[in-house]
Length: 60
Image 1 (tube, rainbow, N blue to C red):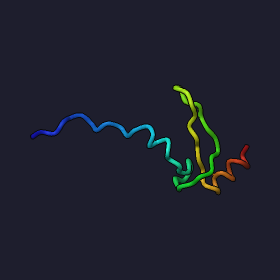
Image 2: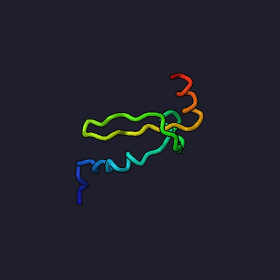
Image 3: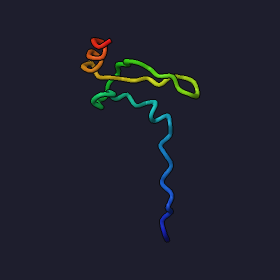
Image 4: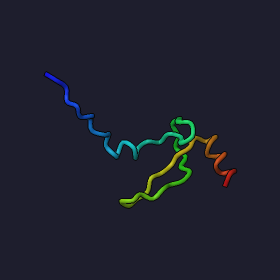
């Protein structure tokens, strides 16, 4: 039986909402450094590890 030419569906949006990796290095972290508004409402949190969060605070 031939395979379908269609690509698999994208991952659910909720999986991206649970992503708590550092925006700079990709390590798991819990420190929220900022958030962005979403077009449909609500916000998207941006996380950074303690090292990169400190660097971002110094830059502000």
